[in-house]
Structure formats: C-alpha cells, structure tokens
Amino acid sequence: GLTRLEIVGSGRNVSIRATVNPSLDLVTKLLMELGPTLFKMIREIGRTMLSRPEAKAAMERIVEQRLKGKGKFKEEPIATEPGGAGALGQAADVAKFPSGKEAKDISSLPPGTARPARAAEYIEEPGGVVTERQGRSAHPGHIETKYAGHSGSYADIRAELDAYKIATGKSDADIAKAMISAQQTGTVPPGFEDFPNLKSLIRHEKVEMGRSSAHVVTGTLARELTAEGHMTTGELFGAKGSTMERSGAVAISSQAAEDVGAGAERKYAASRSATKAEVQQMLNTELELMSRYIFSKLQCDKPLVRDAAQLEKLIKKELHDYIADMVDKGLFGFGSGH
Image (tube, rainbow, N blue to C red; front, side, top):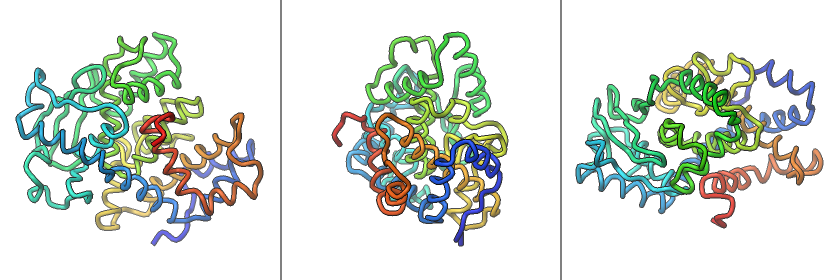
C-alpha cells in the first residue's frame, strides 16, 4: 500500500518554492503527514458530490433525452443545465453513475445510460453545441470532446488559450472566471462571445469529473485558484508529456487526456497494477494542488488561520469539512448558501 509519500518529479519545485516561502513548505509537510488519507478524502468528497440527489436528477434528465433520440443531430442536441447540479449531472452521466456506483460492465446498464463505442453526440453547453465522439469503447476514458480548429489535446488547448490571451489582452484569471460564470449562469459572459471553444472547455471539465471523482475536487479548486490569480491556464490544462516533469505544473485532472498519462488512476483503481511512478506522479500532482490551494488561503486579506498551530489543527482535524465546503461553493456558487 501507499503508506508514505515520496515527492518525486515535483520534488525540486516544492523545495525551490519552500526556500522562498517557508509556510508553503509547512502546508506541504502537514499534508504529507496525512499520507494516503488525503487521497482517499479527495475521492470520497468527489463521489459524495456526484451522488447528490440533485446531480442524479440532472443526470436522469440527460438519459431521458438520449432515449428519445436527442443528441444524434446538431440541430437537436442534448440540453444541459447550468449551476452545480447541472455540472455534476453531466459528470455523473459521463461516469455511468446510474446507481451511484461506477458500472464495471456497460452492457448491464439501463438503456440510454451509455454511448456505444464510436458514437457521436451533440451536447448544448453555454455558448453553443459541442460535438463529442466515443472512442474504442463506451467507457468514460474514451471520450473525445471536439474543439474547433484543433485536436482537443491539452497541448493544443494551451496553445489556443495563449494565442487568445495575446489577441484579446485577457488574463488567465479572466478565462477561469469566464468558465465559472458560464457554468453557473448558463450564458457566456460579455467579452467572451468571440471565443467559440469556451463551450468545449466547459464540457471538457464535466468529462474529466466523470472520469475521475478526484477531479470533482481538484478541478474545482484549480479553477478557483486560477480565477484568483494563483495559477496559470498553462498549469490548469497540463501539457503534452508527463505533467509533473515540467516545473510546477498541476494537470487539470489527475487522470487527464492521453497526453498527460490518462491510465494511471484507472489502472491503479482497477487492479493496483499501475507502476509506482505513475501513481506517485498523480499523487504528487494532487498534493501540490492541495498545498497551493491552502497556502493561497493564508495569503489573503483574511487568512484562514493565524499561526502554525491553527494550520496544523485545520489540516489534521478539519480538512475534510473545509475542502467539501469549498468544492460545494466552487460548484454551486459562493452565494448559494447550499
């Protein structure tokens, strides 16, 4: 079992930043002391969110539309719903979550739940219709969300965002805020109407949440970090190749598209047969994200805790409830009083 965390790959990034900022080092050290508990907690919070009654209801409305033949043509796409429940409903649909548990055998699922291999589907998102294609199987890992003008790889997404930022003067924070706002309101915010792939980015996030319950947590927190200026879109969307080999990158998902080593979590979960390095890389990514997230809350006008003793109490005793609350706010909106 993974009884302790060795920081490999990202080790130098963590230690370089730690010399500049000892409190980030302390956050990382305290999180590492939690060991595997941290990673179990992230997945448990994600699964709890996906299993919420309002998420299940939103998922069932998608399945009903598919059963009626919606989504087969661009003119009759599957309609989706804004807000946290709508986002989780799409993710649960991708995850094949009809019973709140991931199905091992697609053929045993109720009709309309799974898209067959090679099938294309049209889905309405804020900003327009997204085309998606199922790959060599009906499983969540084999979904291609199509992007206008490129292949949909993380490297292409990043290149497009970089060009868009240069052309428009928009910041990384602007882009993350637009993604959050569009999902919560159902409409593309002013100034982003000329970015046709915003709708694809928004859908891509749901696919990643469906692929990995961990991403319900990590993706939501990473978007918030980016919206607050603590992370770049380059980090948010990973890179081609092994994400953590580049300095300081945090993949958008712990189990992202093929070009960021998609198999690690799936293999690890299914048979515990992933190489130790693959699992370690994924866990390092999550550890770094959680460290940076908590650290960002110590750097604001109203710091979350005031001293090392309070920080230790937060991480050792209160972390589950705090992170669950922040993920809830990130998905449902900070004013939702959920």
